[in-house]
Image (tube, rainbow, N blue to C red):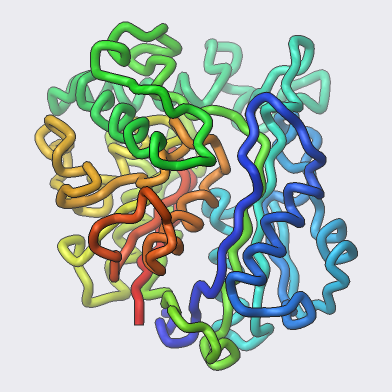
Amino acid sequence: MLNAKQVIFSGAGQSEVMRKESRSAIDLTLDAALEAIAHAGLDSSEIDGLSSYPGVRKDISPGFGPVSLADVKNALGLRLNWHSAGWEGPAQAGAIVNACAAVASGLCNHVLVFRTVTEASSVTGERKASVSGTGGDRISGPFQWMVPFKGYSAVNTVALYAQRHFHDFGTTRQTLGEIATNNRRNAALNPKAVFTEPLNMGDYLEARMISSPLCLFDCDVPVDASTAIVVSRAEAATEVSDPIYLEALGSALHGQDSWDNFSPDLTEMAAHDAAAAMWSQTDLTPADVETAQLYDGFSMLTLSWIEALGFCGKGEAKDFLMGGGNISRDGLLPLNTNGGQLSGGRTHGFGYFYEAILQMRGEAGERQLARKPRVAVVANGGGPLGSCFLLRTG
């Protein structure tokens, strides 16, 4: 178990989030990295750890992994005592899990963790995004068993989870629509968000279907962006004025590591394993959480996290989300206050950490919550991939 006093989130930075224009991946990364380092009150010379997800990956989706550790190390002139990047792990935030473990174990003092994507500018008429891979003539891995049955994308599998939840618990499209419309209202206050025009329930229900019951507004939007976080050993970051401590984290995986066969219960995902592991490490409860930044690659994943984390009982999301009041900015659980990935742009999970840190330090500008959160939960991933973090102020 990680001691909360050992690990703090000391800084965060984010580049422009772009949809139509393009800058190089390394330029975006350095913008985010330098902002995060300055936000932590550090100099680049003090960064002795470097972590990222997934490293350079040209065999997945265009723009999915365009920047290597070496690119950043050399550009910033870093002298590293520890570094890590890779594909396998508890979703994209596995890089942050690794960083927390590295500073807690004394391998290094300050880890710069970054995630860069250029998926908006990399996809063209000839080059489409696909998690099933683009690097060879034959699809391999789990998607070789799914693509022949028209499981071309994660949206097809998540739609099956949604259909089962609808069947078992009476969940409706309006339930998911509360998440999408709430995120859009929050995005209107975020100058970096890519979709800010109003979205009401009628607009949502009339939108083009992608994979029933998931429509266009249930799916996140590809962007070009970089987000960076500095994870520090508390003893080495005594100058941080508003330390944000890691209270607990969960990255458990008990089911099958497979999108299409994770669990016999299609209403549960890895979120449920990760959440249970996280809550087992703390005396805090869901009632203590004052904001939640929950993964919304698809709206159904957010619903799954809400139930898994205990903000309502299993199968009770329909009632918890009804009318959107509970997840509004002044509600019981202010959700995805930057617009999430559905409206803010797909920063692959790292944008939630950026937003949580700004909110907890009272630096979120126009979208700052009326009450500065003292406890926040950040969740990342879906299907057989998931990790979640409980953060608290000192």
